[in-house]
Length: 315
Image: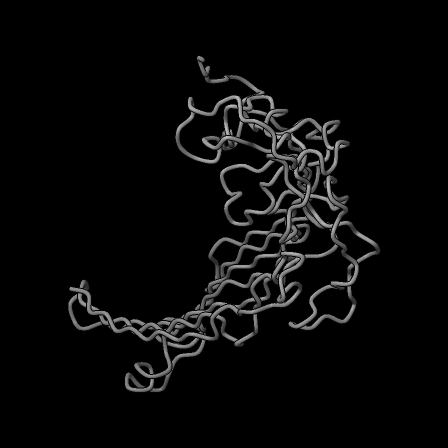
């Protein structure tokens, strides 16, 4: 017997066709293995195999995968407004606001960040995958700024002496403020009972899972999901448009000052950096695996405020 290697679009997944799922439990019945003695290792080396194995497009393969096949669609629409002030009178800033919507039916190279969004339900009907991209951010506001305090030599407010100027003059503050919506969640199931020999499954949605009052122990309504019946894919979307991870509400800032040390090219710099300046809590995404004991719970948070101090000598 010659076992040929398949190639092409059908090679992407060695999954049963949806109409085969109508056989139900008969797909799991043990039948004689026609490849016994030819395939000598792995799950296809035994005397029997499940009936469904022989109904796969390439029954002599256990699993056939091709990461990120060259097929898919995407649609990105956005409204962007920004304001930029060039450095003048000690002030510079850049402010940008974006409202956007990003729809795809597959994931690209960044899909590893939310791996469950890469799981295709039915490889014979990828229209079921059309949903928000995992990095869809509907609202984003970012502001960066630099401001030199008007105190010091050559500034609006001149200190009374060189000693006072060395203490209060020449300070500069800068920062980046970021406010972004959270990314959509990709809910999956802990148990895949499709028995499709290659397809995946998402839970059925019984009602809107959004909660107006969320807690880290109940980020969304976990009772809004149910395990699909055996030999079905579930009706949940690839990503949930109204159930998202915690957004970003963050301020980073720096304070610095230079002291001249005689020669023009010799100076001393003091710099203080504040990450998460106001110590706001930022949560990781909740558990998104239906059937997991921690489903819907947030189990971690982003780092708290961090302060770095530095002193640098230039010569």
